[in-house]
Length: 123
Image (cartoon, rainbow, N blue to C red):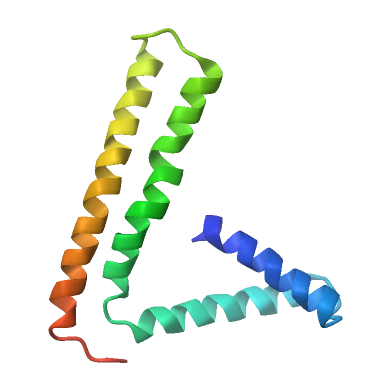
């Protein structure tokens, strides 16, 4: 959440300061960020299948950026000795990340289908 929310926070604060002439500082940051979190919480409560959506889209967005892209980048930058412990560990983490990227959307879609049969808004 924090990784994807930080650019939104920056954009909101920039618009509030430059276009709407709010004074920059802690009160603005606290108010704007709290309002954003409250809005996302409302969206999450509105959709009873939000957990399935998180699993579905999270598999596409979070798994690559969290699990295996850092390992691939590290392997490219550091170039560890082939078949060393760090080389093996990174490839294991890459395989786990790819598996999560493939399985998470399947599980999320399954959850959406199951929840869609019985969902009630704001329940």
